[in-house]
Structure formats: C-alpha cells, structure tokens
Image (tube, rainbow, N blue to C red; front, side, top):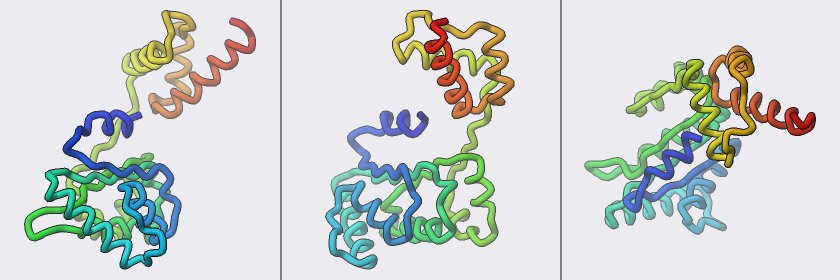
Length: 193
C-alpha cells in the first residue's frame, strides 16, 4: 500500500524500478533491476549489465530525471544481495548519486540492517522510517477507508466489538488487519450475514 502510494507521488521527473520479489542471486537482482528500467541485458554478463545500468542512469541524469529503485520485501534479501545493493548504490558522478534506493520491508529488515556485517550498507542509508502499528482509532479509519475504496456504501460494516477484536488480534499491524478483515468478510458472505 505504501509502495503504491509512493509510486503515485513520483512524477515525470522520476524513472522508477520496482522489485517485488527480491529472492534472487546477486546477478539475478542486477538483471531484474536493469529489466525494470527497460534496459536490454539479455546475453550480458554481470559486469556488462552493471555498465549498461550505469550508462542508462547517466543518460537519465542528463535528461533531468531522478532514478529510484524500490525493493519491496527487503527483509528477505540475503547478505550477498544486500551487498549487491550497496555496490549499486556506489554508482555516482563526481557530485551526485545516480540512483536513489528505497528498501521496504517488515520489521525484520531493521534487525537485518543492524547486523555488524552490513555496516557499510547501513552507513549509506540517509533516511530510515519505521511505521508503527496503528492505534485503535486509526485502525477504524483505515478499515472504513479500505471498505469505501472497495465500493462499500456503509455495508458491510464492522461493529464496535468486532473492531476491538480485530485490533486485539492484529496489534494494529496493517497486514494483519487486512488478513483478518478479509477472513471476516468472507465468513460473513458464506453465512450471508
């Protein structure tokens, strides 16, 4: 949800690549990044792929575009892949970075990045943000918003006790809120209630 919202905010000045499933080897990740930017890399080895990516990023800078690489589910990256990301983050000119990298993931990502072996990558991270669990009132608004977005006109709805139970179960974590609400809506449909 946050990733989609961020992509919608990026305008014509930005060129983006989105990696949704980063479970690859280092060469596969580099190829996936290049492919997401639309760079033809079939038949190229790792060094040639890196050179093609560098050339592409330099051209985009000349065109006045900022390139952004977004990696979702980054908590699943191995240390080897995180090291590959660090190497990609080294692509730069004398005065600027060629690529902005956004790592999005579950709370386990924070623990992974705190590993001493990843200190060089951690030193390159300029901004960190950890989304805290929603409070009960925020969760109510979140659920109502999602229902409206899905086309609800007030029905189906969750009662106050149901919302409290959803909050207790989920701890305010959006992914768990979505899962339990989905199950509740399905059960309501099956029971025609």
